[in-house]
Image (cartoon, rainbow, N blue to C red; front, top):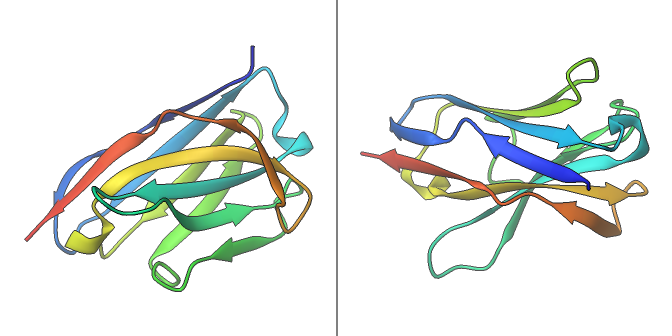
Length: 120
């Protein structure tokens, strides 16, 4: 069955960096666009960013633009979320999702998430 597995979460101080991974199993990255979402305690799930199935297009929320970068490694069938200059407001569970079309209008598969905690 199709699986998206996130890893790389952890605890960092303000200003630190982390790289999250989204390993994709049993589907080819070229078939789907991949998005990152996050959900903080007591808040709704928030779109973070996405990369198209071709890898040529990306989109980011205003809250992370300039600090976060989404990268693809087709050989590893993995999507990365490179995060820098982290702030306490970035604390959340981060999940990846595979979707169709660009802009993405439907998500078919979801990962379970990885926790990111940013302390002052």
